[in-house]
Image (cartoon, rainbow, N blue to C red; front, top):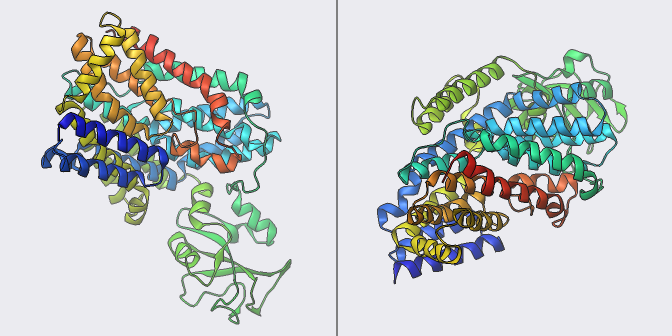
Length: 518
């Protein structure tokens, strides 16, 4: 089969598969790589090259860094500081929450930031007597803008820097993205503060996530416990478990102060209905407060004979105060950013070394590492890299670029850039922004080469456009994370998202060429 025809057919099939969302994105990406090989569009080496690409190693390391900051309480601490220091004025709280979201995203990615700050946003909404729907979309949108502050903000930043080098240009600097990231963040904040109250819905969800930042105080009050008994620290904590029907523990004798059969956990309190009980044989519906190490509590919570009221992992992440491991994770992050900023070593090596330090110093465990690394993301990137290769080697990207040049004229690079930006923004509302950039980047390179303009404005423009994932809840995982807690519907995103997307498009088309000339 003709390589160009094969590449285009596989690309169209992949877009349909991504949009319909009937198959896992990872499966689609693997199918793309295998289909390109089967049709002869890429060689065997090109098919598997994505799995050994430095960006895959880099992304895997970033997941570990994000997990270290989250699991040691750094993100929770930042959220707690926000709730304590901001006043009760809606605009002040909203601006502070969005700035915190953007700064954290610049260090740990969009998804990690949104996941960590959703409970904080819900708590702030309750404090303001506002529905969470007024704060959570702004939280996610600020994270998208914050992804343009440093190279760490999103994998796309690393990807376009690498593609720029492969196209014969230079890489982007660690903080170079902030030249457009800062105006984007300011613009998004202004849009949300001015238009948010009118364009965002006013709904109170029935299943909003609980803020567990004051979990220890809540247990101490509800069970009349001494403060030390409900204390939550790095190594140990407390959880509540409920005895469900047909539990093997029904009938067991329990009393406060006793150790569980394994000897790992201590029973701190027992409650039946509204009454605390000093000594009893367990019945269905009884509630126990258990103290122990987080690992032991996690194992107990996973026992089919009990039902945890709150996940030990969520309690630990939201309640832990800063300690030795927190400082180690922050120090490693700062050092890593320094090495990346000054381009001392290849980015993949720097992030891999930082991850190794965090694991070696036991800031994160191997089980945490394994659960934190998103295989779906890595497979999507690795599987779509052959598509990017095929678009270039088959000549498809060159033909698409020739069509764009014939439509808009080689003398108008702004029109060419605008067409590419619009393509990225439209596709990015339904496809993974990583997949979108991998698809469009070869076209941007071909346009730059055929018109003799610099590749840098093209790469930076599609990076900005790739971050403009505002119009649908499926555009990014961050948008999806706030949908249920905010009780949002599909059509709620585009109302505020449209002016934000217009801002990103304007920055990509007009500001980017001023900073990185054609």
